[in-house]
Length: 636
Ligand SMILES: *[C@@H]1O[C@H](CO)[C@@H](O)[C@H](O)[C@H]1NC(C)=O
Ligand SMILES: *[C@@H]1O[C@H](CO)[C@@H](O)[C@H](O)[C@H]1NC(C)=O
Ligand SMILES: CC(=O)N[C@H]1CO[C@H](CO)[C@@H](O)[C@@H]1O
Image (tube, rainbow, N blue to C red; front, top):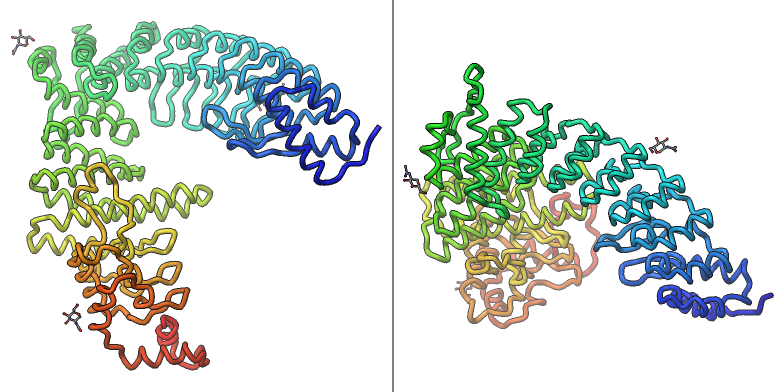
């Protein structure tokens, strides 16, 4: 049976059926659809994707996601909805692309709907775009009943997501012990490795789920190393998980040296952890480590030390119980002992080494010991850049602490400020490389790149506060030149000069905005002195001069306005460059003050006048004059 229906009625129907499915009104759906043409109308309505709240779903998917069992029932039984449709749904703030109704019901823990879908023949292993199966969704959620149901219906425990992260790993990470047990019974491979080389044991050790660690070990899981050469035991010690360390070190397979390393690393981590700082536990485990070294006087395990690290106050680790007892009362030395131990055991190249160094530095900064803070942060930043890891956050952190120092009138260490700036300039060139190596991540890369450009500008403003000697000035100019040479630009084509002259340039609001403000005439001059191109146009064709003449604070901040404009004009900024809207700087100037400065300084060269006329009259010139001149004419 079918009745005629217009296109606009179909559109209306799509909306109404979707809303009814979302809200669980099964009878309405039946009433709306039952006498319509199946082939033409019903299929179209039920396959229609509706976008709402960051999700993109069909009626069946939204009903499964929301747990509307009756709706699912009607859509499957009465209208034969396509059970393998996929859409985008949100779970825990993440957008999941390519999710089937079954995936949604499993992830949201709607047992009856999972059953219904399976009974109707849903593909139990239909994975999302990132290769997450319905079983993985259920493991994440920790719903044992759903997990069992899926497994009984042929779910494959071995399918990993695109990061090679298995169902077992996610259950271990989230701490769902009974799910872990069932997965193991069904033959999940406990030694499978994720992309980072980690096994299920690493994930449970990291999170301190000691009962799961025990289940895994008893089921025969191996203690493998991840890509950072860390065993699950070392991961537990680094993540400050004492119960896991105690359990794993008590196992007969744990060798003496593994035990020593684990105790020392755990103690060292307790001494410098942001969340779990605990001096008495730190001393307790450091002591255990030392006792272990001397537990067999026939076979004493001596410490083999690396050269001392200057940032750690050149601290030398204690090698005997006597030295340890001497160290015990000197809290500050225990902190440095901890940092030295972590670097020795984990290795300089380990990405986990820097974060406690940063924490310790921050504590020094809070106590106004800026010198120690800077030494530690420089060390952490060096370790990161050595391994070509991003130092974006480190740079910003430095800009913040330097700003705080300027604000508090604490003398800035010239050498360190220049050093940080140089690291920043190098980082910017690495950003460009990273962009080329990984074009699929363009948006994120560009975001970080632009953040780094901003941070470098903050550092430049801070450098203007330095009491700088002549030979250091040369170093500074060279670094600024090296920066300009990379021609850093924002997505809108803004150069450093545009940014320095725009009062809308974003300024970090943690201390930095106490010290940094734009426009900044002094910095404008510095950039120009170091070779900045005063006529470079942004994507809208605006030159730096176009930007500064629109400054809305020309009276109260006359000094910056005037200094900037004079610097631009004296450096040869063409007053008559047109932007994409064919407007010169004078045309877009919003204040009389800027007008006056331009007019009193206007002395158009003959070359400029000629170019203006050529463009105005539309005279042919391409190919008729030297290429260098063509560009010049084009500016006008
Ligand atoms: C389960 O998935 C794994 C990994 O994709 C595959 O190698 C294996 O053949 C699958 N098992 C079955 C029974 O389909
Ligand atoms: C270490 O501190 C304890 C109390 O915390 C104190 O009794 C002891 O005398 C101190 N030892 C040294 C060598 O300062
Ligand atoms: C070169 C030149 O004409 N400079 C003038 C620019 O305008 C300022 C006033 O804003 C004058 O003081 C300069 O002499």
